[in-house]
Image (cartoon, rainbow, N blue to C red; front, side):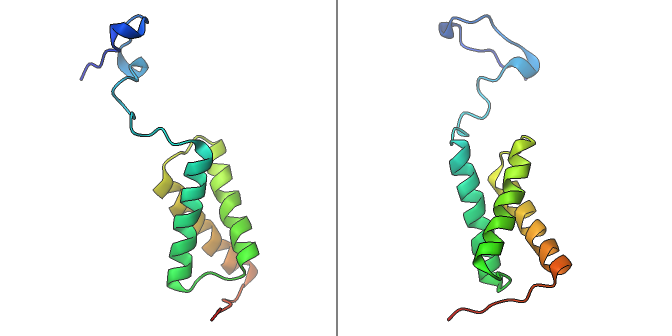
Amino acid sequence: MLVRMPTWLGAPPLFGTQAWWGRCRSMNEALPIVMESSLHIAWDYLEGTGELGDPETAGRVLLDAIEAMVLRGETRKIMLSNKAIEAYQQFKVQHRLTVVRCS
């Protein structure tokens, strides 16, 4: 499929991977919002499954994982969330953390 940039933007038409117009128009969330949403999704999942341990440690591990992936160019919220969950689960196994239940 050939996508051309509208000429009213005043730029020459671009083809192939340069033709960004028409793709990702709905993905205009600011990066901090994407990171916050990803953290929230991961947190809710871990809390819902009962895997969430110490909140401070969990927040640090999840945010570090999300930040590292964002620095590599990943911006998909679900991918960021899933990888952060995986990183936290691995962290728990490596450090033998126990779950703290809050009531």
